[in-house]
Figure (cartoon, rainbow, N blue to C red):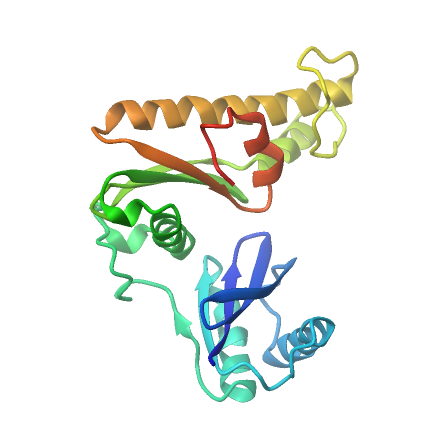
Length: 245
């Protein structure tokens, strides 16, 4: 049995998942710190693994997807020193089985590639009857499109909801920093709830509009899946048949 540690380094959070063969056995979300050393990763991972009952030396393979290049050094040293060898790094030239039809394939972030590959396989689109749209709610919000043949076509990039919330706080003198939460009503009756309505329902509306435009632009049916740290907050405000989490 192979025990694989998968690491997805985002601009804000890093998600770690342990797989036993093809099954996800445990996962954790930590803050991304680009300067974290291999020894710091070792202490952190040992604690997390102990919490889930995994033996410290049970990991025998690794894979890294990162949009923060400086973070890769410490991670690779961790895998070399504590797991017996370097991890596979997702990036230009890696064979995923999915052709990248971007004008410059090297511009596509590792996170977008793994999202597209995982969604295409997970949604059953690999049967060749439909494509898929992946909406990733992270530091940036991205829409990635895969056709029924399993080819990555491209997509959309927009500021993430957290970036927008911080921009309101930093650039409007009287607006406070708010928690990202559903206010209950679109027509809010105080400043905090009004900001929450604009952020949550505004982003849900943007998701709907862009999914509609993508579907109108392609000539085949496409299922939509949401991922990322804020997916549960936003995707639940879209129609049930629009975005699957």
